[in-house]
Amino acid sequence: MAIYAANVPDSVKPDEYHDLILEGLQTESIAAASGVAVVNTSAATLNIPRITADTTAVWALEGEDLEVGNPALDEIASTPKKVGGVIKVSRELAQDSSPAATKLVGDSLTRSVAVALDKAYFTNSGAQIAKAPKGLPGVTGALTVASDAADLDAFTEAQVKVLGARAQVTAWYMNAATYLRFAGIKQADASNVGLLETQFAINGVPVHVTEDLADDVVYGADTSKALLIIRDRAKVEVSNEAYFSTDEVAVKVTMRADLAFPSPKSIVKITVAPAA
View 1 (cartoon, rainbow, N blue to C red):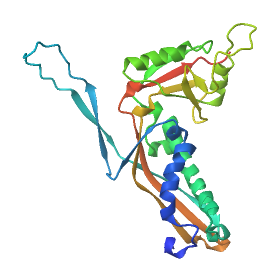
View 2 (view 1 turned 90 degrees about the horizontal axis):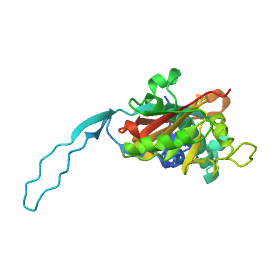
View 3 (view 1 turned 180 degrees about the vertical axis):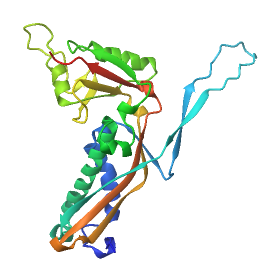
């Protein structure tokens, strides 16, 4: 039988970690830090309504009846999926009830969840992805743009396309190698002045660097229209028995989360031509 919080040292109290984990995700997870909207729910399945076609407004004279219209609606069903991990901590650390010890354990738990969340958000491959929510590569109907990496025109084109869908690019995502290709573009031949006016921003939009994306792939997104759905509280359990022979304590975190993109055209993928 596992031994839980009541039977372990004061430093490792599960109730302390829920807020630590959720707050930590805002900085440790690249996806969450980019401004993705967080939706909390207690439902096993959350139905997210979306408008697929607006009703039509018309001009009318005073006293004239207005036409009655109905917007076209449908729903996205979101079922949060389980993500979790186990870490080992020494009994000495578990017996240390200082805030620093609590933060040390909380940071480790947060990083493990953040890494898994980002892999789901940015990739669509690997054994774990079959069990994870569908991220940006799995969005059907996202906009597309091509770039030769000779200038920043593709980013302007991407922003304009997203504006046409009544959204606004608020985040760019790419890996370090891809970012460096664009950061290395100069204003003119024989010039040392780069096209990027601000480091880690393109056309005024922040760039978020993640190694979960492949080379020569860029995503732009209106993060206010990308949803991170979290079901209930992050659950932390502690066991004295799992590593009895090494005198260590096992700390397990589980959380249920999903990703949803109700407005596919608020996302744009830029495919960059490989470097020569």
